Length: 358
Image 1 (spheres, rainbow, N blue to C red):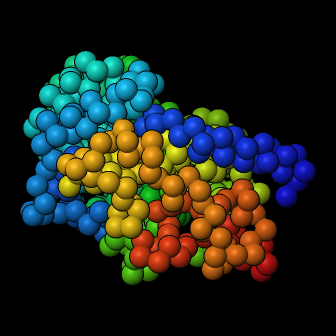
Image 2 (cartoon, rainbow, N blue to C red; image 1 turned 90 degrees about the horizontal axis):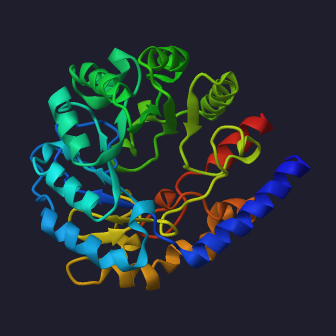
Image 3 (spheres, rainbow, N blue to C red; image 1 turned 60 degrees about the vertical axis):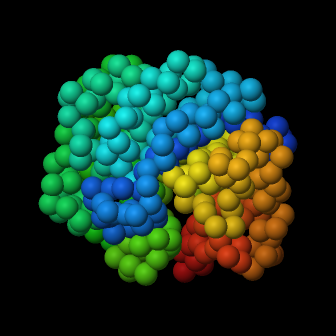
């Protein structure tokens, strides 16, 4: 690693530790439902159409938000509404208007199946200011991933509607697999033809339905190929391409995303799950849950708990014990640790090191 990059990483490490000390909450994820109109093969939440878990009543979520208002700056705090599929809720605009009244920006993460021009106008009128749509390959690959012959068509329609909407921050998120890795150049050109400006690429974590599916896992060489692709696409400058904030990337830090790696779960990011659990992102359950809005004060939980997120010294075990870059990584993303024993399940840096060794 070059000296200049090491110096930059050391400076960023100090910033990260200061951020953990201050833990200013500025991003809240609401898992509004576990219902979904797709059954994606990689789903980390294991959502389905007839899931027995009820949607959280909007009044309960808004009550939790009111508890957190005294310790946040609403006009600098984003609320991301996820699922399941959030557009299955008919009261989403009601929630959005209430959040807007309180000064919050809000957005959705959607598969696009239910979006049309009328619904989009309704959401924007209710204060929606950001959106993310998933597109996981060209038609065959995407429909395979999403388990629906209609998914690609609807996702593309949603992308077209969003890109035509003024005053809306919008990006597309692509999950790379064995089915679409060779399509990345064509996907890029297709997204450009739709007028997209921002594109995020990520790889599948070994959780949920993806845990035992070999079609979703990439070889070490394929993983490096993705980073090289992103690096070149960023140099090209036609599209703002970022690799997701999944893990530390060694020499690729500063090359494939706008910021150095940091896991902001519990540092700046909190989540309210559909059952009221207070966590940091919807992928973090079980031992990483910090409280519940039905028995705890959201603000108190944020201020006084989350130590497992803010002091990452406990992650220095297993393959992290003697890692020479641990000071910059501190155990990778929180969602990549087994929630029962805390062991790291996946290391991006080690994948890249194996390629270099060969």
